[in-house]
Length: 165
Ligand SMILES: CC(C)(COP(=O)(O)OP(=O)(O)OC[C@H]1O[C@@H](n2cnc3c(N)ncnc32)[C@H](O)[C@@H]1OP(=O)(O)O)[C@@H](O)C(=O)NCCC(=O)NCCS
Image 1 (tube, rainbow, N blue to C red):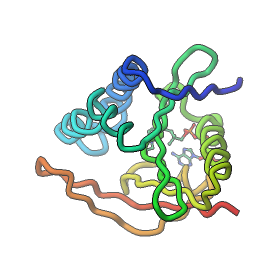
Image 2: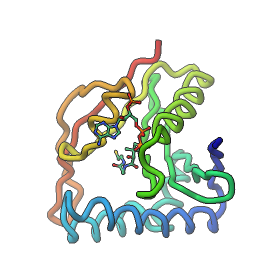
Image 3: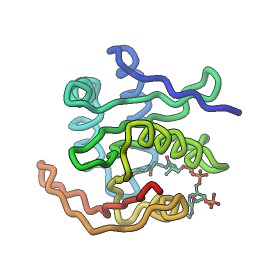
C-alpha cells in the first residue's frame, strides 16, 4: 500500500507530529537511553515549539501516512556541503518492518537527487538496532559522535553516511 508524505508546515501538523513523537520516543527510547533522557530530549527537541523553531531554521518535516493513517514522521535538511541530513525518521511500532523504512528512504533519496545532493547522512544511537537497518539500506558507519546536549546528557551516536551513485 502506497505511502503518502505530507509536508508539515502548519502549527496543527507540527503539533500532531509532537503527539506521535511522544508515543514513539517513550515506547522505543526508554529502554535504550532511560526515562530521564527521553523526558529531556522530547521536551528539548520534539515539542511543537522546538519543531517550529527547527522549521524556521530550514528543517522540513513530513508526516508519513498509509492512506489516511499517520504512521510516522521524517525531518530532513540540506547541509552546506552537498549532503542531505536525515534529522528524524521515526515510525510507530505497528508500522515498522515489512519494508516501510526502505520505502521512506527511497522517497528521501529521490528528494536528495532532485536537489542535486550526493550524500545522505544521519546520526543514530550506538545501541539502536536501527544501525543494522541503515546498513541494510546502504549506509556505512562514518564515525562515532558524542554530543553534549545539556542537562547532564550526552548523545552517544554513530554518524552514518550513504553516497548516492
Ligand atoms: C529504523 C526504522 C525507520 C526502519 O524502518 P523499518 O520499516 O523497520 O525497516 P524496513 O522493514 O524497511 O527494513 C529495512 C532493512 O533493514 C533491515 N532491518 C530492519 N530492522 C532491523 C534490525 N533491527 N536488525 C537488522 N536488520 C534490520 C530489514 O531486514 C531490511 O533489510 P532487507 O530489505 O535487506 O531485508 C524503524 O524501524 C523505526 O522507526 N524504528 C524506531 C525508531 C528509530 O530507531 N528510528 C531511527 C532513529 S535514527
